[in-house]
Image 1: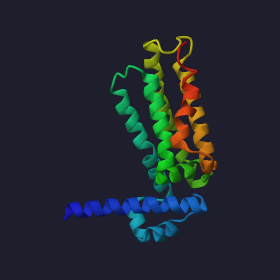
Image 2: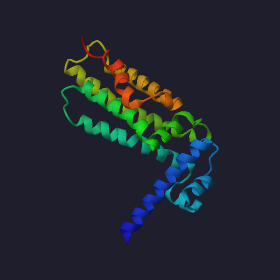
Image 3: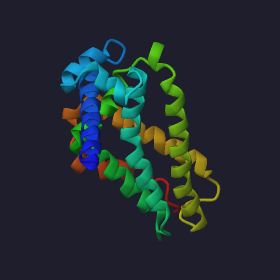
Image 4: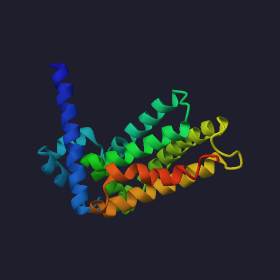
Amino acid sequence: MVRKTKEGAQETREDILKAAAQIFMEKGVTKATLEEIAEEAGVTRGAVYWHFKNKQDLFCALHDKLHKPLTESILRDLETDHPDPLQQLLDLCVHTLIQIEEDPVKRQILTIFKLKCEYAGETASVLDSQIELKEKSFSLFEKYFERAQRKGHISEEVPPKSLTRGLTCYLGGIVHDYLLHPKTFNMSEEAEPLMKVFFLGVYKR
């Protein structure tokens, strides 16, 4: 019985997150209300408050839902001594881009953060947690380039930090353009060639 109750609570939480993403997409984060989210999820407002303190807390939970799997994937990658860290990172980037196209929930949440939020008022403080998470991801990406440099795959004259900055800007630009014009992309075909444009310029010649 306890197990079923826990499972039920988790399902309700996921339903609320799904509903929040839908309402945020339709109305934007600032204009969305908890009442609308509760109605979309088919639960009471009290049920929403049982799982989340306020709209800001709900917004942060969506952010974690998006970024936690990627961080965990990177950490698993870094546990192994891959013979070609650049290929390892390229594969990760390609997989990430394809997943955005194939996973409608992930695509929806990304669209909210990139295009549907003004980061003002009650959502302004969320920027701090986003910056913290971005810095963590940045340092993890940098480790791939550091390993590649130690293996002699990239020039010692190029700082891993600069390569990381270039990659995050390049990848972020692709994601932003895709979210704006998804019908003009076919990520299953284009993701790898797009990422090779960047990585072929990184390998030491």
